[in-house]
Image (cartoon, rainbow, N blue to C red; front, side, top):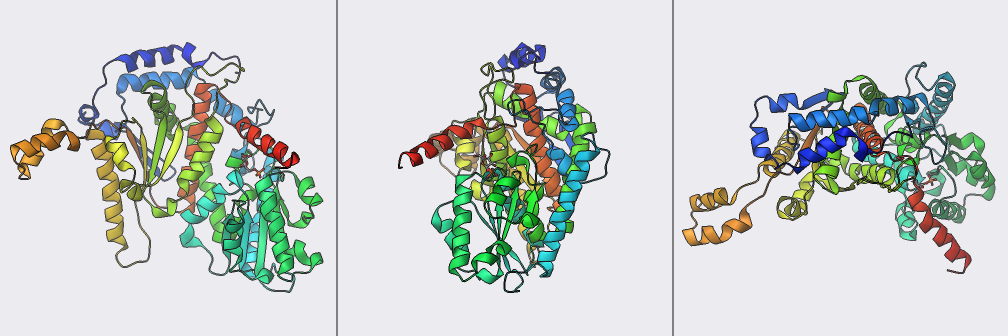
Length: 525
Ligand SMILES: O=P(O)(O)OC[C@H]1O[C@](O)(CO)[C@@H](O)[C@@H]1O
């Protein structure tokens, strides 16, 4: 498949280019099409995607599906699930999908299944023992605090999921996350903790990451400083890594070392032992539900026809917006406050995967690749950067993510929920429809402005509209739906890389800065 033609050579790409050169149909017109919402809404694994506000009609849709077929998305997907070395620059398979639990018999084979199950069972057992207070510190105290030290993919996934599932968090054990090597980041967590009752998890695929090793060394000094005897420090440490020889060299007990493998990319590693801090926080059963939700999305991705395949549709609409409507960013607006860290997580997953400028065959990219992913909580965004979205001069698409049910035990939770989801719907509609100059002037007159004022103000208060969006609804914000949501974005990123003919699974772009920092350190700073 590395010999496949580049995207611009595909007939569907050229067809899409021709369609993009035609005068655009306003979203107002499109939204007036009968049955449009029904035709462009699909559900899977507790998630519903409403794509009716995308700037697509049936011809564009057909051409996008042709592009999916001509790009051999299905074949590339199967190659990934079979464990072929699709990460060609590192000569590795990409098998985070094998980590989602389930029965033997997956396309990656039973040997991998057995390896994964063994480690998953170890992780779950350890998490439960720690929660039950049977894993103890050197002086026999149950642990009350766990500090995960890791950065990038060794931090963002479990931290994001811990927030999203905060309603399940243990009262007995608090889990903290420290990524930044600035001293304050670690100190601001440690200053409230009792060393006798604190366990550090050092999460690093490579165990060479300077930031993580700096924090880990500092944590060990803190333990010693707080009176933990030198020969007992290892009882307060856990390592999670794909390079156990390195962690062992640094004194981490192999019994307290949890493994993942080089065929799991850091930003795709939440499903592996790297999920231990999350499993401690929410419990092993909920962690397994998260895996099951991702597995349900994998099944959908593998078997649903491309036309109604959620990851494929998200990817195709993204390609239309990025490559043909020339929109360089992707805004994600989450309307459930527990999804507060979802955007930073997707930002790494998408931008570190698809922020590439070289095709698989080594030639320079001939098409725009991964977008700039940004955003945050939608309601807060409305009072901050949505001004630019509505009236600024950047054309950009939006993914609105909402939750259909509310289970917060607050007397007025239902009223909160209504406000939140009403705003989500109103924003999507306002962005799609906009408001013309004439409508604005008429509205101002209706509101009592005199003719001169209405005429003067209307240009400032009109909205161009035609901002394409997805509405993505989770039935509930529970571990299963969260797992499905994450897997959906993972597979979307995969499909886009498949179309752009780039490798989503290396990250050479982060190397040069690291090398230079090391060289500067050697040269004395
Ligand atoms: O888990 P590690 O090896 O410490 O790496 C942390 C992060 O650093 C990166 O390599 C980027 O520098 C990410 O890909 C990774 O998630």
